Length: 164
Image (tube, rainbow, N blue to C red; front, side, top):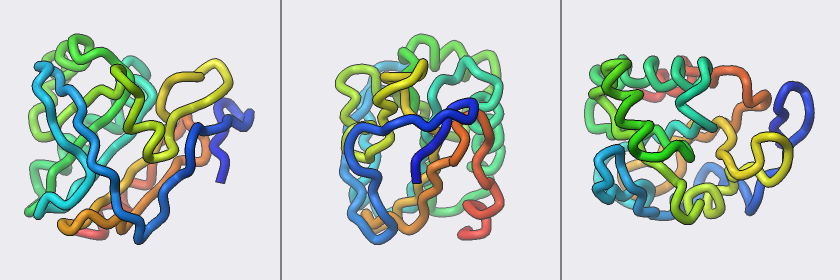
């Protein structure tokens, strides 16, 4: 499925992973510049929220919603990944009270976007990540994935939460 931005199709670099695939382990900087691993086997469920930029209303809403829900989840790590610089992510988290999830940046090498097939390759959003939610099981397999069809809309929160 090819996502759209304001109704216009966008191309993604790489191949989107599928349910049942192994989730590549990627090391990304967090808001304090420490390295955090996402994907791979971690012994916990990983809910990976992918957003273009925390500076947009929909991305901010998605992050706030999962921050609230993350506090209720057992045996799960919740991540938000964007291309925002870690400094901007830190400011966003401070301003919005985001404390229950890890905010990570793919700005250095875009490795996450390329390996997960979520890097926008054209349009005005070229170089950003498309909106998606991925759940990785404790053994490192993808058990849920939603690449949101229209980048400007929110994901299906209930479908994710129903898995827990």
